Image (tube, rainbow over all chains, first blue to last red; front, side, top):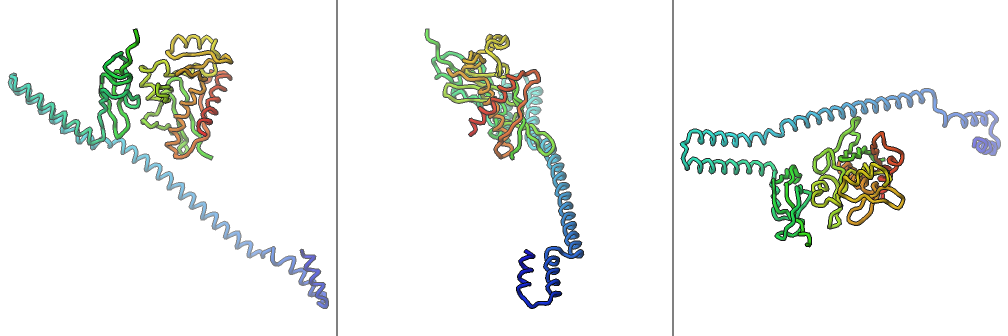
Length: 197
Length: 166
């Protein structure tokens, strides 16, 4: 490349020898190699940028570990106090049961006492079901439904002509779902076609 | 490259974990449990159930509910362990053409790794639901006493699984 330029310069004939030499020197040095000061500046600039990025990284890292710690604490607290609302709703039911027991103890042993206990228990149960409902707990009572292992636990099978095969004949224990997630399967007896003969 | 998951493929239960930052994290399945029964069931309606639901219907479908498959994986039908198992389990253990111990459900003969693959797929699904991305690599545990054939058969459950994913 510098040869080409040299040729070009030579071609422009009558230039003084010195000028040619000067041109040559300029061609070789000036554009590709920056001066010492310029290099120093570029280096300083790069170092400053590296430092800045390093600091940003450290800060981001600190932020992340803080966020992790915070979320761990939040989660622990959430676990700890998640039952608070539920507990608050359950307390009146305990009150009601205690009141019922006191009433029975104080009451005379006549038939009207029994009726009152039943009524009280029914009301308490109603309150209790209400609380469960409020917290997204729903009953699974599949009597007569098709057996569904996603929600039912088969305890045994029984031959029958009264139900289509694979139907829930009896529910031993009701199941429950919490916000669509099964927390306890219903314990059931499943029907089976009667074997021939 | 996606995350690599770790699966503990157990005889009765299986478990899946991922690295969350610098700590391993055991994942809960869709039912909120950290372990999933290693049970696979083939129902009359040609449905394949894996995990808790398969276990719950075991009583109603004993011959097509496969469990403790890990005891058969990589074993020959004639081995003593297999012969003893035949007497213990309600499903059919059959001899494959190559002499391996296979199982039978709904009239289909299947290799043990095929059944284990179902469990692995379920564990993979759990991890994918958590990570929100596809998982293509997994480390699966085997007991220290597993021989080469058992180890290879466990690895074979991987490709079967991969095929099913494609």
